[in-house]
Structures are given as C-alpha cells and as structure tokens.
Length: 309
Image 1 (tube, one colour):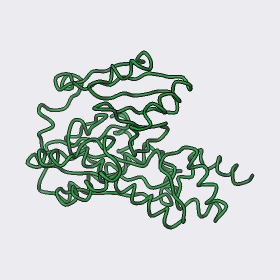
Image 2: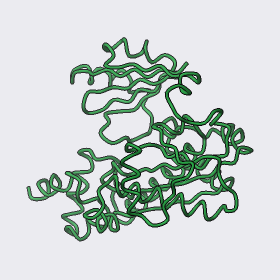
Image 3: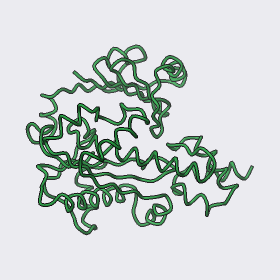
Image 4: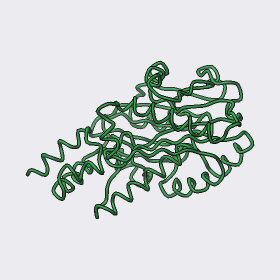
C-alpha cells in the first residue's frame, strides 16, 4: 500500500537529512528542491521551503525519523476509486494522456506531450518500465523515451525560451500550459482519427474550472471525455509515457543550450541558474539571455545584480 507523508523541518534538520541521504540521491532536478533520494521503495523529496515529502510503502516509518507529519495520505486502488471520478478499471482503458515539463525551470523550454496508449499496449509499456518519471534517472528517461516513441502515437510541442518570452506577457504560465495541452491533444486526436480514446487524462496543474476558463480562448477546443487528476501517471501509463517524452525533450534542449553557450546550463531555478545567467549577460547581454532563459523569473534580476559586481 502506497503512502505519502509530508513533514516540515528546520534548516538544521535539513542539513542532517542531506548528509544522511547523500548516497541515495537520484539524478533529478526538481524546481525549489534541496534533493531527491530513494531508499528502498521510498522516495524522499526535500524542498527549500523545509517541506519534505516521503512516498512509498514505508513512507510513514521513514518520515517519523525526522518529524511529525504535516499531513498524511494513504492511497490504494480501492481508495483511489472513491476519491477520483475516473471510470472503473481506468488503468486498463485506451487513454490519451498529457503532461508537461520545464515550466518551473529558468533555462530551457516548456515541453508538452500528448501520448495515446491503446489498451493492448498497457501491459507492454509497464513491462518496459514506463512509470512516474520522478522515479527514473535522466539516462533511463532518455532511453525509455526513444523506445516509447517507436511504439505509440504521440504529439510533442516545444516552446523555446525565445518564443516563450514573446508569448508570456499575453499568456500567464497557467494559460500557456492550457493552450499547449489543448493543442497537443487536438493534434494527436487528428492524427489517430478515426480512432477515439475511451478517455483523455490531463496531469492536473490547475483546477478544472480554471482550465475550462482558459481553453475557451483557444481554437480547436477539446472537451469530450476529458479528465483531470494530479499524479496522473499513477492512474494510467499514457500520462507516464507523455511525461517521459516531455522530460527527455527538455533534457535534450538543455544539452543543446549548454553546447551553444559553451557552459553547463542547469535545470531548475536555484542559485546555480543565477550564476550561469550572469555569465550569459556578461557574454551577450539581455539579447543573448532571452534566447535561453524565461526572463520573467526572479532569476533575471538576481543575475543582473551578480553581473554588475
């Protein structure tokens, strides 16, 4: 039975945890995180806010070492049916899933993927190891993405930073993601027609009402058989596949940026991003930075201050 435990720790405790889990770090960068580690079947994600999330069968025991839970949630198949409005036996249906990556990273694009998994492919994809991308290393993600793209229909949209900066004043982050998810789903539905999925599952990033408010402004609105749920990859492998393809594309674009600039471009929005941005500013000013970073992030002002010293 999978559990989620959330605790809040002090800076001192966070230092102890970082040292304790150092050998178990996963090669993953999550915005505003201190580290991501995995011990046995339990994944530990620690955030700069002091919040630490434990996920897995032994989450409660692992969390208890460090503090009392701020909240706890136990989930299994029976409780999932009670707390979601998904159709029965959802994980075995033919589903189109969508997910995005890069929205919280200062450098790199926003990538959105819609992937269609026919019910006959569900078992095969799971056997290949297609699951929550947060449980996979970056090399595994890159390798799996190549395999997935050969097996199922998908549509990948990539918004490079330069384009993002042009769109952003008109579209806030949520509106932009709504537009991209809707467009990726619409294009994939057109591609697989006359096949129609039994459901469309969006990895939820905003309340359903908010999504529907923004999508009214878009052409080719998709509204039939639409479902929204957080951690969608736990409910259908189609969302996991979409997440992996999105993540692999994001990583590839970061590699391209690093090669073009001649310096390692980090993921996320931490101090490492500030320092690299300052170097880019020194090299080519805002004109150059705008090609590689999402300028409305607070990192831009921090980089300016560093560059001016």
